[in-house]
Amino acid sequence: MRNPPALEQLVEALRCLPGVGPKSALRMAYYLLQRDRKGAGLLAQSLDQALQVVSHCGLCNNFSEQEVCPLCTSPARDHSLLCIVEMPSDLMMLEQTQSYNGMYFVLMGRLSPLDGIGPRDIHLDKLLKRAQDGEVEEVILATNYTVEGEATAHYVSELLRARGLKVSRIARGLPMGGEIEHVDSGTLAQAMLERRNVR
Amino acid sequence: MRNPPALEQLVEALRCLPGVGPKSALRMAYYLLQRDRKGAGLLAQSLDQALQVVSHCGLCNNFSEQEVCPLCTSPARDHSLLCIVEMPSDLMMLEQTQSYNGMYFVLMGRLSPLDGIGPRDIHLDKLLKRAQDGEVEEVILATNYTVEGEATAHYVSELLRARGLKVSRIARGLPMGGEIEHVDSGTLAQAMLERRNVR
Image 1 (cartoon, rainbow over the protein chains, first blue to last red):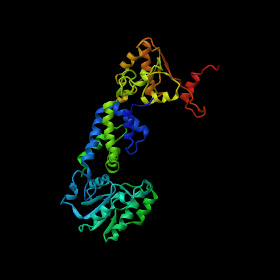
Image 2: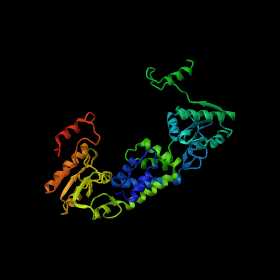
Image 3: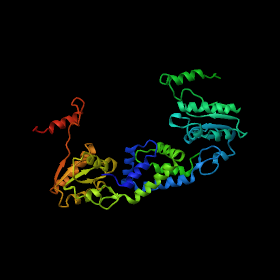
Image 4: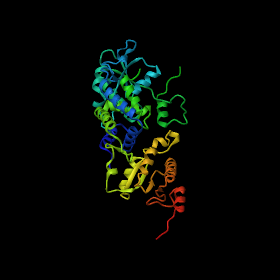
């Protein structure tokens, strides 16, 4: 006794989603066919549509429907600053802070040899070209403070400094509302090392 | 700064999947567009295909590409037994045990008022018609031993016994390899209450 072929095929196809194993895929397929056929139809349509129109911005490498995205063409922004982030969601978080008015470059990932993601997969050639356009004066590394994010920042900074660019890294320290008693010792050690003069 | 509209639309559509919230949907969309465009295309195709060809068996209510599924038309099976299960995966588990040769009825869910799933959503009209076809002699309730599964079994058994059908429930007790020291007290109490004569 097996499920109908088209259902098995759907279960298999759902497994391409990250974090979805055989059991969740089966549950999803049952759910879609049983309770949300309209949603499933819409999902198929949205997938096709997104595959057709969404590509990467030629400058910042973020997802975009245009060749160059609105942010990269905006004259209101400071073209001498280039902030490097891992993912579009990082870019959006930074934009929400309204603390930065420069340009971005989205790596669309991080160096992670264990997952088979090497320098070529995070578009470093495109980044080098972008950073050497003559306008960029400072590159700000805003990759995560994870092992992979740190490794990526180190690798990228070596590349960029070898080409004479000024490279900086976003600060590390206690978060807002952070209590010394409860913060991890790595963060506390860094906060101590990178202490600033009180003015 | 927002994602391109087609990407936002895809994120929204992915949220129709069970267990997928805004954050996972965004992660899935990024992943598909960035690393697995082929998988995304295949997923869209499989969804369309499944929506087109997969429907429910007219007799057992399981998913099927035919009007009546192969199991229901099989002459090798005992048509006097009707086993009621919640989901197709339960049916498949029972089939794997090779301990049952009767027919099935798949509720495609369970009574769950909190989730808005009432008697109408688990196809009880279809079940009543099926159980009273003249051939069925015993109905076996094989819903889960969860709160919802128990409530469903209770409700269904009332309906069926009122129509003069013999109704039974799969046994409860210690699982294979179960140790009295480690089993929960509810199971142990039931195992004691439902003890059997040793022959």
